[in-house]
Image (cartoon, one colour):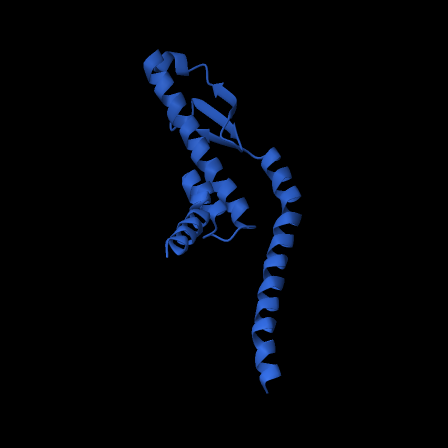
Length: 142
């Protein structure tokens, strides 16, 4: 009877380990796919008047900008610059959403990596480790 009781925690630990390894393998195999998809990703946004089109890549970098000739007749330089900025911002926002969705296929929504993709907070990437280090320091103080 006691031998069976000793095996139960080991069985649960082994099952958890297998689950973690499976998640890692899925993530690792998906990296090539996601890198290829990110390399090909480009998103275009158009200004409300249709005179400005901005295309950005996966990192939000501007890769193409098209201005209709009519834009020079309808907008002064300050208006045009604001329109370009707003249009690029729209394209970047769309790109961010698409990148987050791609990454979400491989990372749990509550994982530090997924949270970083949403908020850009580097501190969140190490939050768990920071907490463990604080707890270890607290244990040393006892």
